[in-house]
Image (cartoon, rainbow, N blue to C red):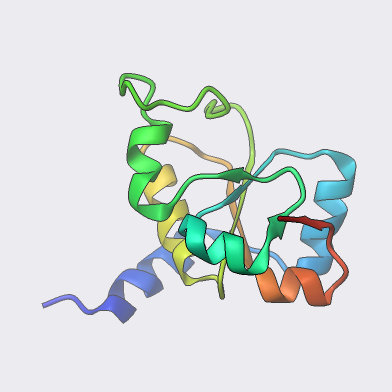
Length: 124
């Protein structure tokens, strides 16, 4: 049986993680699309990255699939995606899903707490 750690290890092996300061610099450049993959209640509690799209990890397949009636138009395989969550685990797992779906440029920026501690811009 695969464990949760097995899935996380597989995700971390294929989804590059950058530190908050590098992610903040990318955000300031307007590079890519930032996505918070936490549930709305978590985002309501702590806020999120300024301008970030919000797609819960459990919905990412539907939002990213252009054949789905739930497809979100900001998903485009030519763009780079920067994913954030609570600590980095959900972002890694969602990132692996996106890579499996053919999105080549997916980056894990870790947790929202690190983003805020590094001075990254936030919104409610």
